Amino acid sequence: MKLRLFFILVFITLASCGSKQPTILSTSTNSTSTSLDHVPFENISEYSKNKNYGLNGENPVKVGDMSVENQRKYLSSLAGPNGETLQFHRRGSCCPYKSSNSFMGSALVDVYEVIYEGLEEPILIYISLYDFEKLYLPKGFTKR
Image (tube, rainbow, N blue to C red; front, side):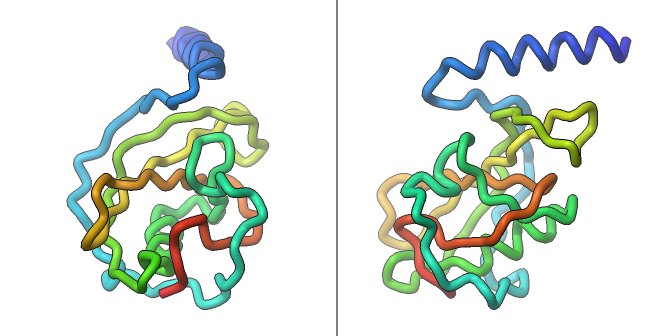
């Protein structure tokens, strides 16, 4: 059974590599959470040089610690372009990538849908809890 699951995961990984829009592999029924629910990271002050940082599955924010709490803490560190308070919820997982910190060497990226007052369409933020890298502000967001 484990071998079968492994081959299915490999097939999904290979099939999703060529698509521009990531396929969400799992979904969540988490309720909407506001940025006030979590203590933000205080040390995020710079923008990434990568214009797609956190905005697609190939360039996820890497919060590490194997903790969903760190994902929410990161999102709680952000505000809209004019300081708007964010609301967010986990939409699912996608975009497998190689990681020595995950089960069987392949990690998934969690996808969060972010909204704030005045935003026409939700923005998706891609976050990995398996690995850690210096945290930055994604394009279009400011520090809370």
